Figure 1 (tube, rainbow, N blue to C red):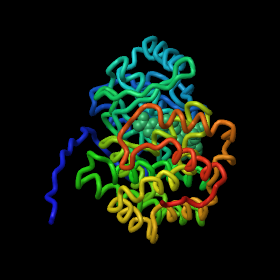
Figure 2 (cartoon, helix red, strand yellow):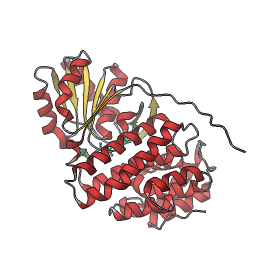
Figure 3 (cartoon, protein in one colour):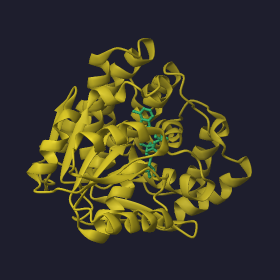
Figure 4 (tube, rainbow, N blue to C red):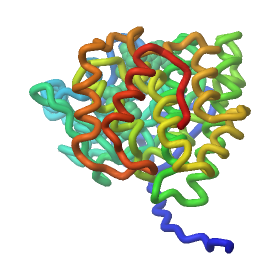
Length: 357
Ligand code: NAD
């Protein structure tokens, strides 16, 4: 019997400007929002470029806050909020990856100021109404329309400085959003299409970036993939893979993109039998026979980490990680089974190829 399609799709509002050299358009984007005092948020590494932007805003800049940190600590947000109020900022410009965008989102949540985000990694936070914040060592995640940036300015030229190794792990982080979107219970035809495009863009571009970091077309394809995968993350619910990454990142302080890179093939394998259509689509986009193995091989080809033991996970923590990942029930194509997750983590710890039941 043919099953009829049934879906709900809720489009997120937002303006997207994509291209090479688009940073030049930032002053016009600030003006289009009716703003005159933009506070620029960044990390210390991108401080010089943030000051160039401040200069280019020519009187419409309120200053630079370069203290963004991983996992958006509330103490950092409060310091930035102090500067924002002192300078009378009327909009936020985030220049950087997920950490920087997280800080702009935390400020927007508290002030309702509009945000223009200029993503320089592939993490995808720019396209989501989701914010994860940490306080007293605990990370909590929330969704709100106030969190979603009003404008995303993708400038491919700003990603040329992303080292191929960082492009690889950041790209695998993005692919993870698309893989989990393909088997999300609230997926729609539009998101399925974007997920496949996102995975294919990275599968083709990341090896080219590794071979030639100056390949502008490959850098452009990768940043396009980041947008496609980011929209997937913002639009549908995530499952086991994101839960595991959240658990390992939060409880064991593992690096974000690397954790996604190592776990993704194993989480995909765990769900493969329960989500055959999603796996077929992911495999096709990867140009592989089998999606979990294709993801593992892609990470290996890129020289990215494939074992949790390579990225700081203590073997003694695997039991606790399995407990946390299994404790609060959440939707996943395959039921959450504590022992099977413990086995998954053991394989990921040792960097073995993913095992598809
Ligand atoms: P990041 O923002 O922490 O950046 C890592 C480092 O790379 C920083 O030092 C930064 O200065 C540097 N960097 C950034 N762009 C660069 C470039 N083009 N060239 C050279 N160096 C550059 O890393 P990330 O992986 O983008 O973000 C991770 C954080 O984002 C995590 O806290 C994660 O939870 C969060 N995140 C949130 C969402 C969401 O929807 N809320 C989505 C994805 C990630």
